[in-house]
Image (cartoon, rainbow, N blue to C red; front, side, top):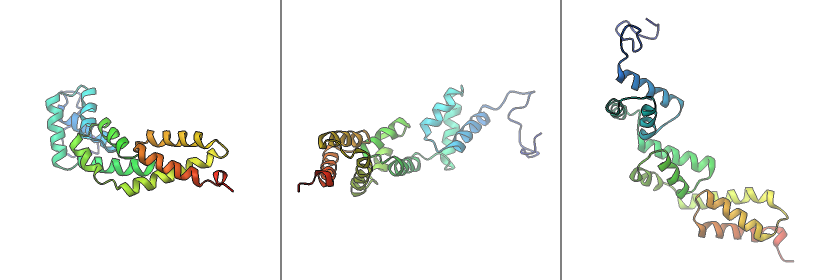
Length: 178
C-alpha cells in the first residue's frame, strides 16, 4: 500500500481486482481540475475519451457539483474576466468561447451580463492605441481597415469598432491638417 493511502482506503488500481469505475472517474476529473478549471461539459468529454461509462460519469460529475468542485457559473465568470483582461475579447467573442467550452447559453448570458460596456469601449481604445504604434506611415484607410478587422476578430460590435478606430486614426499627428 502506498504512503498516500490510509490503512482503510481501498486501492483503486490493485492488481488482483478490477478498479472501481467511480474511483477511476473521480481520479480523471480531479486530475483535469488540477491542470486548469473546466466546465462540466469539458469534464464529461474527458471521461468519455477515457471510456468511462456515461452513468458513472454523470454520477461522479453530479457529486463534484454538490461539493463545489464543478461549478459552471463560477467557471463562466472566471473565463469571461480572464479572457477579457488577457486577450481583450468583447462579449460576442466571449459568448463563442463559452459555447466552445461547453457552457450552456443561460449560464453564458448570466456571465456576460457582468461585462461593462464602458470597460469594453475602453479596452477597444487600448487595443487600437497599442496596434497603431506599429502602423505609423500607413494610409489612413489601411489603418482603419486593419484596426477594424482586429476589433471584429475580438468580437467588438462594428459600430463601436468603427467609431473608436476612426477617432484614433483622425487624432494621429500624421493625419492632422496644418
